[in-house]
Image (cartoon, protein in one colour):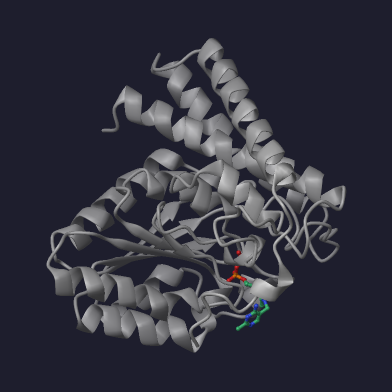
Length: 318
Ligand SMILES: Cc1ncc(C[n+]2csc(CCOP(=O)(O)OP(=O)(O)O)c2C)c(N)n1
């Protein structure tokens, strides 16, 4: 059972993810951000529920839709925002942009714009932990669409074979770009695929942060204890389009509105109020604190010089 302090911390994390992405949508619309952004609004319970089980030493890998995981893992918002703005003080010197943010300090080994590409790389940090003999864990986030990539199958097979300390978290929002899961996959439950590789496969309501946290905690503890990988499927809802500006014309009438009725943050608020673990004053103060942190991060990004194009190949090894 999660403690009051932990639940309040998870609430802060979820609201921070939400407010950061709302702000990113605003500044993107103003033309302040180069490239594309993909937001995960509606999916916050997955990022925050899983990352609450991790230590700063643990590593995550994420995707093109990775702001939430990166913020929940604890990246400093200033270099995070500067990175998305393409500024020299960004966590990657402004060379990565939204889709490839990484931060060694925060244990974020990187977002990745290539679908399914994080999975084989995540075996590397997991193998390194095993090789060093420490108990650090790697978590690899990806979407439902990525589970049809060859990398998914190769990575799960090898992770199970080598008993690697990695947790594969499939954030199943039912869509891969503009294609519904039911039109590209026969099975309904992606976690069923885990059995083929010899690892546990769990499906959880990804809008219920308590459920996500409980199952993620079990999977992370299992990996930390040297018992090997788990596939954790979190069923969730994508409120916005595939990318910022996508009008979602391919979705059935009323579907988006229905998805937005299931608000993972409101669900946690209801739980906290019912259990008397927080009150409205706490929610308001948390929001105010987060908004101030975001204002400071945006000011930092805007005040940072643009990345110098002549540095583009710096730190590129292959
Ligand atoms: C290898 C590869 N194929 C195709 C694309 C184009 N693409 C970008 S995101 C995306 C859909 C990914 O869907 P999913 O894995 O479910 O993640 P979600 O966008 O729902 O978070 C596709 C096909 C790509 N970036 N990389």
